[in-house]
Length: 493
Image (cartoon, rainbow, N blue to C red):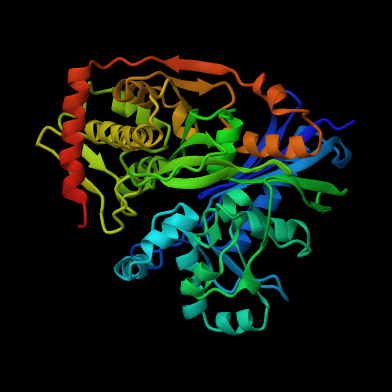
């Protein structure tokens, strides 16, 4: 009797594994952080082998904690930090360099060149993406041009490229499967989301040989199997973390929106079979594809630094000892005292797309305390989310009825209360906030027949708490005006 689904949730700062039961409940979880490398200002790297080793350890730990036998696990689902770029030698399975993380800005100058050459309209039309260092194509180009031996390996057909899902799948299957899903492919800037195929014109533009690319498959379907847990278990679901969270939040109808508060913040609106071209600097992306059905699209806004600003308060400034302390500290003052913190540590994402912006802390007086800075950090997250939502509503021509939230920082009640007040709509937190992993589990479980339909899955979603708006319109306008002034000061620094 199949009792469980195992979800691998490979994030920016940690690898996690979660065992889910038939009701979508968490049975066991394991998590391990891994090293962040910052070799130069604006550069962010990971050791791909450390990512794999931490993921392997957590999946074994979680299964052991659950007391699950391999025969009781119906399938494995993978969700991953997106855009992070891994390149490895097919023969040895060893990476040719450290993984270049989605936050990395080393290719911002080349992106400026692409814009100057007038390539942006073509790229946007095919991929739904803006030209930015965020995406994989410029990172892969950098590896091919700068890592000794990479170009030669590619010419010989021995170089493999993948986002983190592809790297995990390769290792899970012992190098037998080199594949990704449509949601991750749509984040590379090499994939035509309308035709559903790698694009020759884009490959030529970025100098990427087709031989390095993985096969693109539906998000829910059979990818391969692994024997690393003691018995053959199929991998039947893959989706990038934000698309997985949209699915896990059961935002399966057009117009439904979720926001994930993780290292960054990511808001997605389901637009169904319709691909909406954003007029407000948002991204058009593939949300998922189930089996042989048509892909579902979404519009997305990305905030590069969200929960990471709390880590900075902890590790960079040392004003809190652990991340969970931020809420108590911030709540000890009634407001920020006019302080604004714009956490543009890696540039600004949607809807501004300014890779040269840098973080700014302004409005301080002699009376400013660490509590005011902590509160400004939390409010800075909420303001960035609000900017995206305004753009999203303008693009889709719909007024949001509620915002479904998840991710670690969604457990911060003060942040959620302020977010609801700033947006002027209810913010709803589900009972299971592990929606990224849950989405991967649902995609895998549907393909494996563990769950029969999306309708069955929808019955499992339950609200934990609903935060109603508590800020009057005049105050909201004043708060937003202050934020806008701070935002302008940090641009193009």
